[in-house]
Image 1 (tube, rainbow, N blue to C red):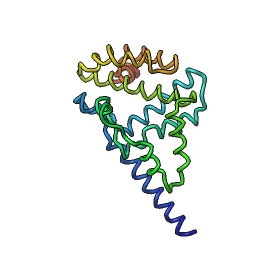
Image 2 (image 1 turned 45 degrees about the horizontal axis):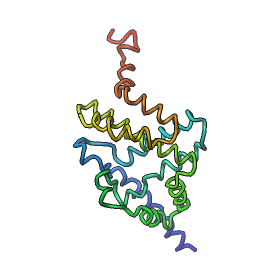
Image 3 (image 1 turned 90 degrees about the vertical axis):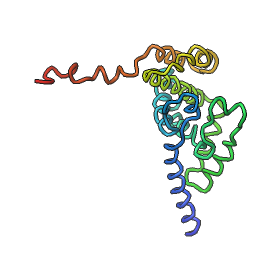
Image 4 (image 1 turned 180 degrees about the vertical axis):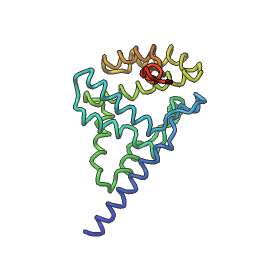
Length: 203
């Protein structure tokens, strides 16, 4: 029994280091953009909040289940990496085997089933998380556009508009997509500038 517990603890620690390595996994589309983009870990964090917002707008879904699903949605990419839309034409990653091996022997092995539910898209929670996964791309495209890239504009007119019309599941996600297109990525901090918020600034 002691040896089994020891082995489990070792696998749990291995798992934690592996999760940490997601900070070093670049999104596949970095090659095509030529810009730094969010790592898998950074993408996952904002996706969680996006999914919560969509769920509350829809007034649907179990929020704790949504967070759990968002946490695991790309977790197998520690082993498969993130393939771009071009690479996926030629290569298919075995994310099922990657997830099986990753969770094997850990105390959180039950989370493996959450990945299956997410991928089935049968539940409202899975659909909301997938919508968030898609919308995070549009947020990042606006951030990249702010840096001067012309590519986001080309994408929005073609494949991103197709995503909005054919791939998003919820009306709330479609509404957010529309609002993102005219949003200002710098608005949140420009409006909180001390010169605007503090009448005594500079005195």
